[in-house]
Image (cartoon, rainbow, N blue to C red; front, side):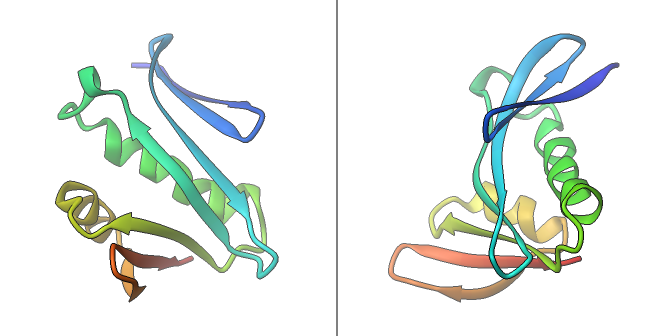
Amino acid sequence: MLTQVTLLGARHVFEIDGVEVGTFVALPTQSNDLELWSFEIYPEFRGCGYSGRLLNEVIRMGKNEYPPRGRVLLWVLKDNERAIHLYTKHGFLRAGENEDSIFMELPL
């Protein structure tokens, strides 16, 4: 199974065997972190394990392609239990919250 991530502007396209299955936008911050602005596996590909593979790609980028990044940062809606579980499973920690969202970080 061939996995490829292609950069189109600020959007990264995630492909499996030439089929686009999701996208993400991750940008460096002024504090030398990598902030995940958007993360999506298309509905027809959810439940196939692609979310974890795509998140691993974001983490890899934080470690290797944008040195020296200290953390990967993101906001997630409080009612998005599947996403919170995914991020926690990959080592993200709760670092704050507001009325609607949880701020999470992964030290690299």
